[in-house]
Image (cartoon, rainbow, N blue to C red):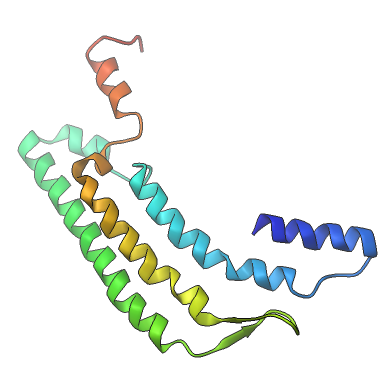
Length: 148
């Protein structure tokens, strides 16, 4: 998306004329970037998590919270897959990006069920998804192995 925007910018600087398709094509990438970013952040443990809350409660409650979070994500991913596939199949429009380029809306809509499928695949990792990216460092600090 950034490179498409730069192409449009440099073309305008060099020729003093705007390309008609660069802005519209870059906008078509926004759903892809957003939906795939969800899956990357979830896989890397960079999602919004309440780690402090899980440390303040007893271990049994924290374990139940982890199961609830994984179940919620699984339901969300399954709904993305199920309803996203329906959204993908029912999309019938074409986006006209320029006179020469027509992009079917299905190309944009397929990012929804694909993101749901990727989230379901990431759930195989289990509780490791719920740890912050530097969880090992937190444990080392608490155990005195690393200075604070």
